Amino acid sequence: DIQMTQSPSSLSASVGDRVTITCRASQVISNHLAWYQQKPGKVPKLLIHDASTLQSGVPSRFSGSGFGTDFTLTISSLQPEDVATYYCQKYNSVPLTFGPGTKVDIK
Amino acid sequence: EVELLESGGGLVQPGGSLRLYCEASGFTFGDYAMTWVRQAPGKGLEWVSSVSSGSVSKYYADSVKGRFTVSRDNSLDTLYLRMNSLRVEDTAIYYCAKTMGSYGVYFFDSWGQGTLVTVSS
Image (cartoon, rainbow over the protein chains, first blue to last red):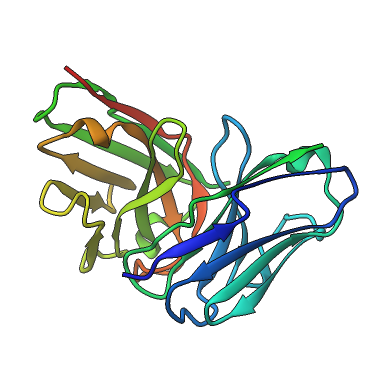
């Protein structure tokens, strides 16, 4: 099975900072990657699919890139409401594996 | 607006069984695959099972294969998860998620609030 890793596992940044989270697949998955945001105590929310397509209603400060095995989620200007854990998920084939998550908070 | 309402969770002893339900509204249920995802307390997300729109294809994580059965009733707009031989490590919030496309191998664009399953003696 393809393994998904994320780095860092957690980060602390200031409001307005540019934040980048990396997701890596152990094998090529084309662009079959989604990103989710889960705020504390809340349900996961889809942010990005097909590696770089922003889901409707998601603020434009979120963006995704990558293809093959290496992917990034970028928050261009971190806001207080972005405090959350972010997960990547592959969907090229089953199992539909999630990454372990990256916890983002405000410094 | 898409709404997914899970129910059926609760406390069960190891080796016991439970059936989860997910009632859907706000979209044409029969046009979409559906998925169960779980989250153990304080842990990350784990895909459990997906079923295609017409129930032709069903997929399971290795951790639940042979113990859990996913099904759906498109006439009732309801998704099910039958869980047998439950283990302590199955303790989690179980989320129902609408899956893009009809096939079942895709991403999840709407999630329910989840139902808590606790396996303990």
